[in-house]
Image (cartoon, rainbow, N blue to C red; front, side):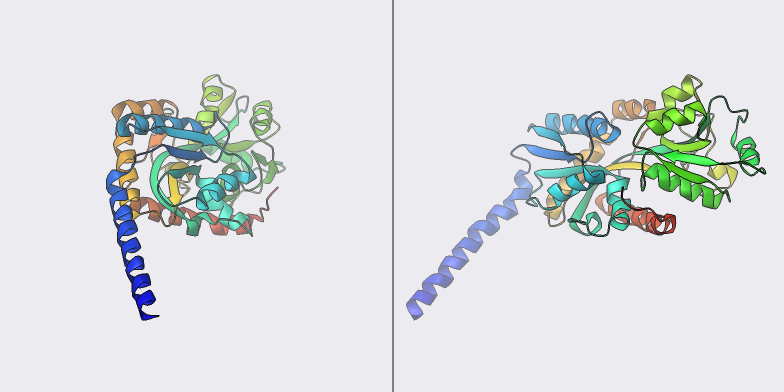
Length: 325
């Protein structure tokens, strides 16, 4: 019995040394095979476009294929679940945004994978300010004029969104609170909200800059404020809400994540690569023309950013009474 025990102990030690060395070397050799990035949304959207830009650069610089796969569904929760349950080796990553990461943990009661606990933030890619827009044929031409109209007697005020619990919904709700407006939320399923805003059936809406800049340029919508700390390069004449005394800087952000137990050295390596890509002048210009800003951050900074955004939206989601559709 003693001999068997000694042999078993030796075998365990040898296995430990072999696999221990393998894992120790993994960060040094990473990446040495294809990387898959799961996008939580459909192809052609802001998250998808941005991810493919970054994936291309990663592939060229690391000399390995970086494959982007779209896995939309369940308000972004499907992609979160796929990556959260994958092997934490740095070869299956998630590209997602503020909704699934910061809003859904409060909006959905029983998530298969909670992104706040089971995902490791890797890199913040970009921030896309939201624009407060009103119909192009409105007599109001700026925020102050709109506010006078909105607070007038017998005004039936309504704002649209792309769905219950979406950023457009929660921003509209938060804005109505901070601007002391009495407004009704009308949820839509996608672009129909913008269509009804253009036609004047809605009085205002928050929308991501890339989705409405063409309509603003054509005069179909008027941009009266942006929810950013500073004015947008794509809309330099549009003041921020802060300039009007409304403390709202919430935008739509997009970032990369990995399963929570991923080797910290690999996490750091991915972050450094993403930061290097985002600091490229050509990419910065390309993003700014689309109404987005590159947002390079360290792992620690991004982790704090993600948690702070969750803390911002949790009480808003609860106060709004939003429930999944």
